[in-house]
View (cartoon, rainbow, N blue to C red):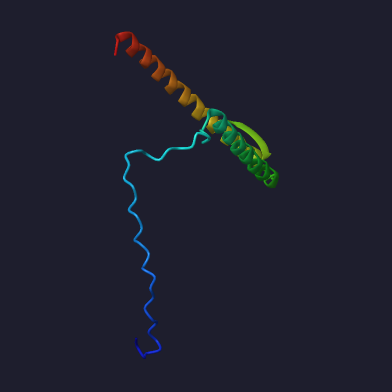
Amino acid sequence: MSSDPYIPPASDVPPPPPPAPPSKSNKPAATPESAVKFTKAAAMWGALVLGFLILIVLLIFISQNTESAEFAFLGWHWSLPLGVAILFAAVAGGLLTVAVGAVRIFQLRRAAKRNLKAGL
């Protein structure tokens, strides 16, 4: 027994046992059966929401850029609101991209059919 008041007396309770090591089983953690899988419908829904958000932003852009601008191309002259003109340019660029992509898809399908007939 110590006369020092700062040292607590020894207790009769043994220290807690060390934690057990994690079990090393070869089984991977099972995923729950009710896990929601990513589907084409979910992708379509996400694309639809994104499309509507872009449409809202475009409508705001067009409504704020209503000042008319003069355009000339190969002797043609016309005036349009600036927002509408930029929207037409974006749509034309998108259509050009779709056309180039469609040509490339056609080329790839033709090459795949050719390889399938050749037995590759």
